[in-house]
Length: 297
Image 1: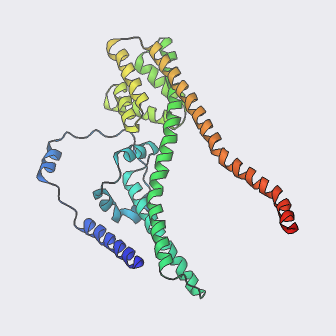
Image 2 (image 1 turned 120 degrees about the vertical axis):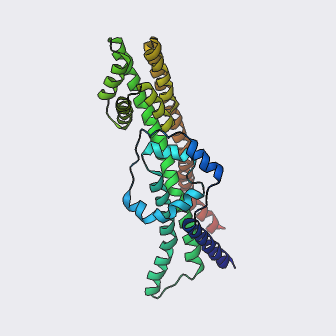
Image 3 (image 1 turned 90 degrees about the vertical axis):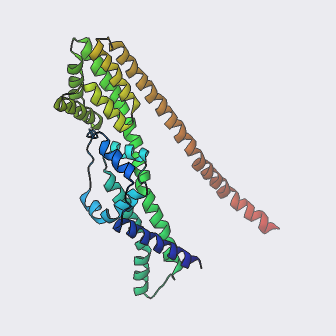
């Protein structure tokens, strides 16, 4: 009964995905009117890098996954940070899920050529488990990479703030200080900041507005706060050198605190392996004596 139920559930889910892809739901009239009356969205500063072969293989599943509400808002922000397109991410989830579903059956076919068989239940259950893992692994990978890249961006942002306030102290203007500081640094974070400043020059907008948009796209509040502080200097002539230096120091303090927390967590994770190793060592020492006592009885 269990294999039949699982097989029927999988077949029903597949048929539902095919129906959603073939006959997409029609949006309501209110949604259409809202789309027509809405303002034209602002083009994002960061452009994702799509993988053509993944998108080609999994393109058929993308509309159904989008109709299911995937990906979430937080995951969309993480995708912007790592530079991966939404369609590419959804296609990779579908491709990995199908690969996990088909892998046990391929193994079953190879074993059948050798005269062995695992039955029907084992490949089915293993395929469902691997399909679920393949569907979740891209999300976990994106979240881990986004957290790491946000931390690296904050580290680079503290150096960028130091360069900006030093350039301001040398008598440069606000826009000149931002451009010079971005041109000096290297790495992914400085490349994103340079791209935002280039977009400001091409669109003839203020650089603090594009930096604020970049902070919103990357979900980095510190960058939005930097843009707000610089806007005061650009629009009202406020002196922000001391504020930028304080923000840089605050970022460095947070980095040190995070590093200490990570080191403490790593130390706590090492407690279990060390304890197991100690217990095994005690068992290795006590085993001969215990055997002698038991044999003497």
